[in-house]
Each structure stands twice: as structure tokens, then as C-alpha cells.
Image (cartoon, rainbow over all chains, first blue to last red; front, side):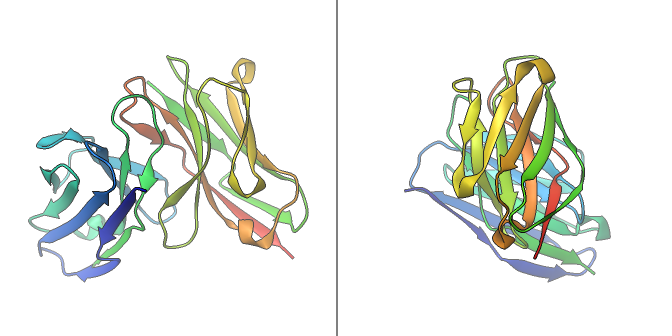
Length: 113
Length: 113
């Protein structure tokens, strides 16, 4: 069966510090991978998605970036965090091709102080 | 472009009462529609999906949803609410490429004893 791992579960970082959140998927090959952000009391905002190694699509301009160095690894990064980057970050995967559901990790609660 | 609107950001029901969470969609192609549930500080879990087969879709935990093309709706129902159903619920629609889901703003369900 497929599993998705996302870490860390919680993170407190000062403004201006770097960020690296990691997500890995097991049990499937060539998945579509996604990073979503959920701000307090709001819905989910798609940040990045990837349909293959090195292929990243950015949905919103911001100071975050994403990379996919391996087939089942997706990394969310920032060189300098802003207060507005606080939120709940969710990684997800879906099967390639067709309109299949997303499967989510347990999320990372990021607080920028 | 695809979009979903969830009608009502908060719904409160008594234990044992009918649960009805409303979702309306807009799509330029035949839609694939999904309902997800999110418990506090966790990722989203798929409840059910509509993929152009039966219009009445049964999901996990006793939930079901009916696709009504004439009303562009995909409302989620459960005949009898349990305390454990208290969570946030998200409706989502897949885009024509199948690589992205667009989520509604979410509906917080409260179940009163």
C-alpha cells in the first residue's frame, strides 16, 4: 500500500531564517506531488505541484520554492521566512494521469516568530 | 476554470440529526468531484469521489453525496450525526488536466450532544 511521510510535524522558526520541509511517498512510482498551505480559518491554497522529477509548477508568487530531486521526494524551501509564511503545510500525492484523488500527509504546523 | 463554493462555513447539528453540507461547483468540463474530511492538526482524508459513474456516491463513515448536474451541486449528507463526525469538510473539483484539485473554503461541522 502507498504511504506518505511528511516532517517535521511542528516547526517554530524566526523571521528571516531558512526553511526546508520534506515529503516522501512510498509504494507507488511517478506520482504527482503537491504542496498546499492552509492558513488559519481558511481553505487550502495550492502552492506547487510536480508531475515528474525536476518538473515544478508554481501556483502563486511568493518567497517559497519547491524541488523534486527524486521521484518520490518533494521539498518545500525558503531562503528567508516571513511572518506571513505561518500556516499548516500539507503534502499530497496522486496517481499520474487521469483525475484521481489526492492522498495527504499529516501536515507541518509552521509558526514564524 | 473549475471552482467550488461551499455554502456555510459553519454547520451545527445535534447528535442523531441529519447532516447536510452544501457544495456547488463550476466546471468547463464534466467534473470529477471529491469530499474530504480534516480532523484538527491532521491532513485531509478522502470521504468519497464522483467520477461520472453513479450519481449517488457512497463514502466512508456513512456519508454519501449526490451529483446533480442540473443544480451544479454535490451536497454531502449523513442520516444520523455522531460526535466523531465533528471536523472540517472540504469539497473539491478536479481540473481538466487531472493534475490539480481546487478546494472550497471548508465547512466546520459541530455536533452537539
